[in-house]
Length: 287
Image (tube, rainbow, N blue to C red; front, side, top):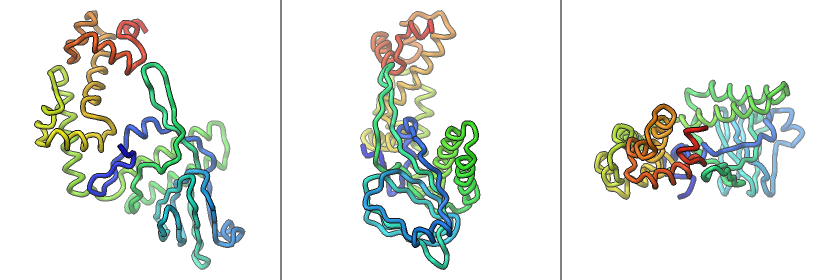
């Protein structure tokens, strides 16, 4: 599935992607009138080398990137990613002022007890809408990141990274939710609530889809669009988390723990538990 998941033109928050998103901040920049005078009001790149997430707090300009030309003004958000030509032009009468996070990133994932990572060069799965009423909060996150970066006090790397995550969360929440998006999100939430209430039962994809009045195929696509994973994997995560509680807080046998957590086959439960946590149920209990 393309990480830039879309449904009816609305980009979902790809939680699976962002749970493994591990940025390395290279710089937090503040482009202002003085900078533009030095650069003759243009930034040209034959091939970009970093990711950049920017917020315009004053002025006007034009960004030509990824085959598109976009006008920037106060309240605009934009992102740039490596490997593309770019031309950013500022107005001379109203110079462009913006803050930007410049970074590299890898995506981290776990396979059993082993951590793996992938270097990533594509755009972040975000839809950059108008900031609207969130303008002050988003501007504050970018400005505070720049202040922290400039002050260079102890731990500034960590605090700047927190500001980036804060900005990403606010950006995700921007803009009105369309009727289609609201309906689909409601269906996914309803399915998750159904899983949490009935995880001990034999739940199939078809049964969950029927509960939210969707076809199984469409339900799977919709669920993955909103959560980043399949319905069955989400269900198993709920079951495994319940199993962890029983292993810590009861004297149940592994077979009993499996059954109480919704797994008919204790051997399958043990294999899945090992895959998800990197430990066998017995080792987890002792840890």
